[in-house]
Length: 211
Image 1: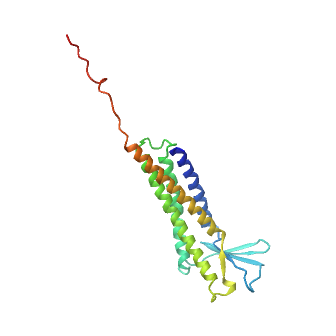
Image 2: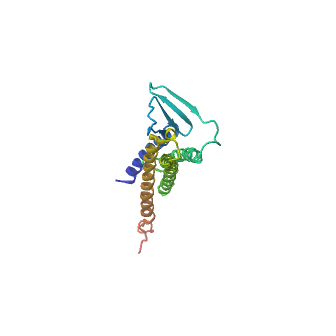
Image 3: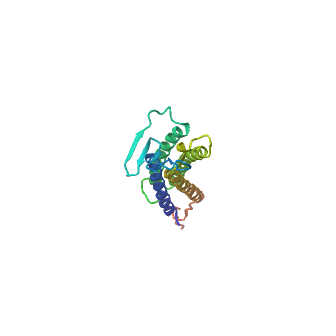
């Protein structure tokens, strides 16, 4: 597969990762209610996200309420908000940079600069994936820790929501895209930097007539 094909694959992976980031940021499914022990009331189900907490009735009706203040939120949720937003912005910027420096576009005519632009986009996608995996893993650790804590009441215990798994998947896709871009960009820059052009002097040499 050529460099253009790899870049197209990386763009697709980056777009999928961006969709995953948006889902994690918008959907309140980071934590869901746990039904264990005597907590078997299934008439309503609680779920929490980055921006709001919701209660879903058994009839399908959903009531959501945004968090009152940022300062009263736990540290993992505050960090998750900041990292997820930065990850989304960085992923968008990296995809735009990749489009500009890709071999299948003509935004940049300098062929020597395209590998460097692709490397910048690869670093951005790697950072975006890390900024998504860190808060998702942190929240998952907090949920598991509270779930196994005997001091926490059964009615207050939560389980991992769907957004946790979506975040892990999106983060892995972004890491793969960034790694592929860095590998192929370095190989292309190395091969292009070692090439030399030789010109024949016979054509430019002035013709001499000898008598």
